[in-house]
Length: 352
Image (cartoon, rainbow, N blue to C red; front, side, top):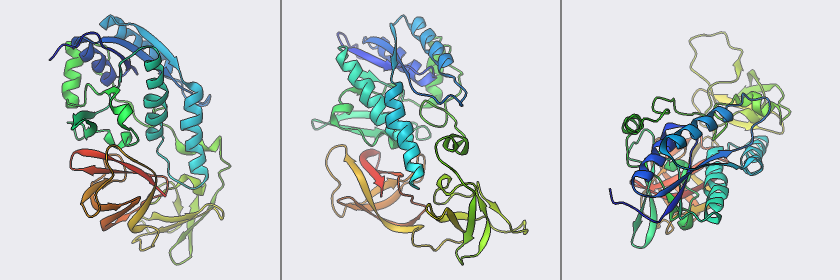
């Protein structure tokens, strides 16, 4: 590795293996590394793990002999991530809190804090890659396709990509764990975090029930017949196959999945073989569009991903409209649609 001297990087250390190895790699490269644990808002009714995660992050920094800082972004997280998520569900949409967490917390408030303190860069444990091509910063998928997190980073622009380092983006996950053992880090065998950014696994019904008046309602089939009950229409998204109760006795029946819902009437419609126009879409419009470099070229074929680790689907782009080669099932308003040119992430938007 080429040694870097005179550059300071603030690493977001979460108490997990990826951020721990990121800090270790950067120190080995010669950066002046400062570990920063981001403390965020957590509702009182959820199990609180942040103190344990902070302790693990602190011990990693002690092992690497680097300074450790706690950054309190509780207010920012509540406003930009939690309130956004609650509002979107309340309006019948399907939000992606991880995208907003990256935009406003990690690459918003954390980046601003680091720059104010004199940092040249921030770094995180994301599995993605940034390269300078022709004087512009471009983002590529992580080497490990099973861990790639570029889907969650489509809102980043030139300023953010020029200010961030993704040290583990060029590694497979098993190599990262091997490095953690070589560095003698306590996080080497720690399980990966899952669920919502910072909050972890959350029971959606329990969480939303504290902020939205969820009411039981009727489940209809596409013929308009009542076939079951649900626990609150706000809880469901297009294509969902669980969480509602079907009254039919036939145990061999095909599964139902959600094809539409009406928040005002508090109803959910399900089908075995969906043909609902709201469920099968060949063209969608995007809002809040962000292109990392230049906008897509008219007529050129790109690939779209509509959920993390979902399949890539061929499409063309014109302005804020995406036209798929084949109709797509279960595109829900509020979802992030992310566009790729082979391995390169070119940006995306929110399904309107």
